[in-house]
Amino acid sequence: MKRVPVLLAAIAAASLVAASARAAGEADDKATQGGWREALNASGSLRGAYWSSTRDLDDEQHIPSASAWLKVAPRFGKAASAHIEGWVRRDGDKSQSQMREAYLDLRQGPVDLRLGQQIIAWGRADELNPTDNLTPRDYTLLVPEASDQRFGTVGARAVWHLGDYALTGAWLPRFRSNIFPIGTTPGVTVTREAPHDAGAALKFERTGRGVEWSVSYYDGLDPNPDLVFAGAGPGGLQLALRNHPIRVLGADVAGVLGRYGLRAEAAYTWTSHDEGPNALVKKPFFYGVAGADRTFDNGTYVNLQYYLRHIAGFSDPNAIADPLQRAIALQSALISNQRDATEHGISLRVSHRWLNDTLEVELLGVISLTRGDNAWRPKLTYALSDSLKLTVGADLFRGGRDTYFGRLRDNSLAYAELKYAF
Image (cartoon, rainbow, N blue to C red; front, side, top):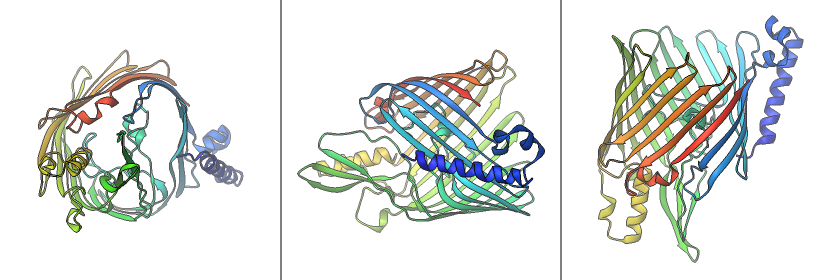
């Protein structure tokens, strides 16, 4: 994560290329008149925040945070452009940086080619996306917006446009895993492995008018690692977060019926559970989401979805006789959200704007109807000016310790962030 020199070097390189292109007369008139910022198409933000705790399931509280985000997107004529985005931050006494994306876009006729570190987000459902398996998120990152938790993976993506249809192919030679909180237990050490196996994906979709849909296939490593037994010794029990191979066949669809937006998304995931005796590898599963949204006359937006997960060949971890294996299997099942053979629930997003759209209040919730655990994210955003925005919110997790959201109860927190955008 500590990549400040790499980030600065990449930005400097982009600046040099853009400056050379402008000097050669390749930049447009607006870029020439406006200086380096327009030539680089630069934007960013400075952020200061307070967090009541971390998102790491630890005991740290009252975290001050300061960060700088920068994005440059210079164009090189009509057929090429670049995109470099990253951040540096300090949370309490912890400093880190990250290059979120750094890629080159090339366009030739109906084909778009993107090369480099990039975020590839698939799926049309709201927040819950069964087909979104290509690039990861850092769920421990202290940011109000879930989209800011995304970071890219090095690869190549090609899109062949065929009128209202498109065929997308992606090759990801360097795998990167989702990062989520695990917590600490006395006598137990958990290591995060860093596999580098390549992955590939295909998607065929229709966009542009009427009903939009897509079918997709992914073959690579699971972005959500399994918690597996790694050994035992004088130092205690050793566990590992290990990403295993998966294959995912998915589809999504979205359309409009009157004043309602309708959407659905589903995927079936084949795992490597049957390839060995390790019962901690997650089992094959189906995951589907369907719902509707509407914006009412008073400006209130409501999105309601139903989700269903079904585990093929489910076995209850509580049925394991050995107490140590049972404890590990239970934690693995909670992390993988495979605690029950079938789990279903609803998600809800409600938002409203006041004061000429300068004040927005939003509530996002996910409720499991199987065990009753739930997660809520209320958020209030107030635009003090065109450039300055105040965000106040919270993450609230409820449920028993043996439930998916209940295990995250210690990650319930409140925050306030002041963001200056430029």
